[in-house]
Length: 482
Image (cartoon, rainbow, N blue to C red; front, side, top):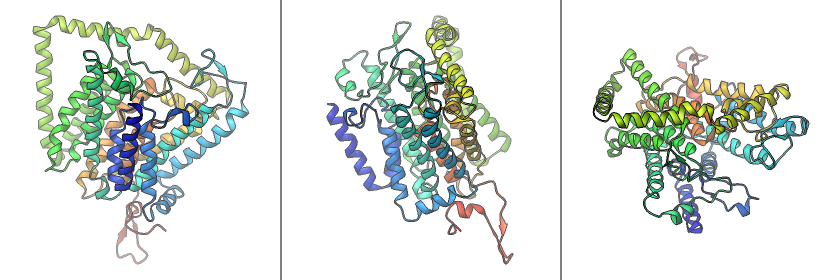
């Protein structure tokens, strides 16, 4: 069965690669929930696990660069004072720190290895995890860079809303299969997708109830994936074409993803849901203040749905108080009591040790894959140094500062979706991020924001002074790069 799964996967990859960028973008989102599948047999990779998502992301980047002029144009952007230059410099810092620092500080700094062999703490030494984690991070960086040029034209990104929806539906399907496994024996089918060499926590329980893990390595990974896709689909649903029949599935898919995030019983997923709801409220307020006529009709529908949700909650409080007490007990066990659990203490130790390793390296970092943490930003700083953290943060800020495109409603909707959808993503990273790899999903979102947005630069006058020429024309391919 596992061989058949790999055969189908590589057949789909081959077909999508031949068909082009839109097909690969769709396959990219559909590959997200298969985090426990080794897309390449571990026997061929010295025990390392390469899941479908980074493989599809790498092939998407390759397909974009195969288009005439795209490679030269991307190099032009990376070597000039553009947003892409920050990410390119970040990549160089990652490579240099990974090659030099584990050898420079070998045996002098205690770390929590990414894959521990003996005990929780060990002296810093070069390892295969430096290679694998740098490879994953490089794929994410290259994905963001290539997507920023590959999705510049409206045709290439027109299928993005549908691709996001398809990824959400596939994620829901994996959740349904895992949930049904509690009632119907589906182990033989699910095990064919659980071939990764790292530890898989697929049978964990909370208060006697089995946590839903989908086809991810553990419940927290599945719950976080549900929240990330929920936020992306919810805010990107206005990018659907008005006549697209699939747009009606967006809100129901969001609701089901929220349910599966709850069923994962993950504290990070619950916190992500809280941030998502806060982002929704802030986005509503922002739209009311700006009074954007293009989105006010959606605001009315959303307000009605929110009112119905409040009515349901009030009804439960009034007529099912025992259920509310049960929910409160579960939340207390997952969130409040979490701070006294051994898991919380262990993860806090990871973060504290990584932070101390950063100080011991004089702020230079100890190399990608040298140590784990339980906070993305701490892992980023400890692995790549203060310089690496600054460059990545500068890149993210540049993405947020992009302006809405003129005369492109879909592009404007996608830019807004990226801004709001990344908030839960970064919060979850603060809670459970173990490595500096921000992941292909975040890379796709940041690249999309660069592709559709306009840079915050003033237009300059041509030499004849007869018309103005925006820098955005260069960024979006309106003129040949100089």
